[in-house]
Amino acid sequence: MSARAVCRLADLKEKEARGCSLELDDGSELQLIVVREGSEVFVYRNRCPHTGVNLEWQPHQFYDLSGAFLQCATHGALFRPEDGYCVRGPCAGESLEAVPVWILEGQVVVIT
Image (cartoon, rainbow, N blue to C red; front, side, top):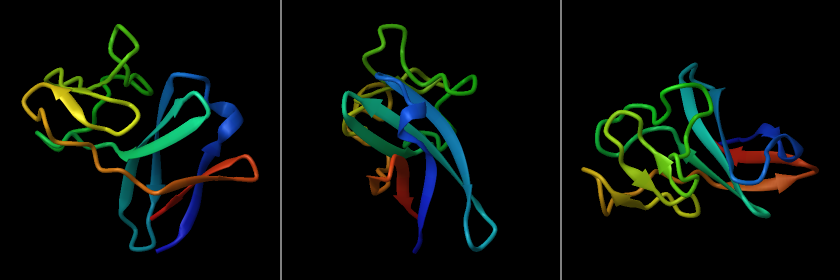
């Protein structure tokens, strides 16, 4: 396990989600969603619990049209940004996989 910075907190606007990719020590890639809701930041694995595909249909396009939920572009499942819980869709009741995160010296840092 190691700690890695994924972006600067200042680069995330309120109600914004960004995709990023980290190369792990074994050479594999970890796709992440970094979400800012108010003063809080949440990070999830970019993987729909229903199909295993990435959520966005275009880079950094994670929110639904209302701006209230993260949405899977493949089948429309809606996830709460604050906990990744699916409120509607074929994976309702399941959740996105949370990644431990903290802010350190203005950087969003995750444990991989």
